[in-house]
Image (cartoon, rainbow, N blue to C red):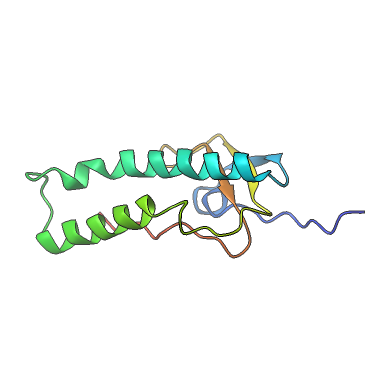
Length: 114
């Protein structure tokens, strides 16, 4: 009997969408690759804030620059890939990344407000 207790993904709560777990516990290779994939998507979605003539303050641009550096530091800052879960959001809000990964004690860098 497994001690696994499924946690509802933050995006599912925030946007009121459903989800399904694809892999309850990923192996290290899948976990590392999924962190890279999600990180890439988060970087791509934040590219616009780095365009010099995008209408935000320099202070806000610096917040985005720091956020993006924190993303780039992944997965090197993850020392243990055990226990990651791969899940998919269903009926998602357009701001959601549809396939994501999480684990107790792991969190993505906090995205600055636009």
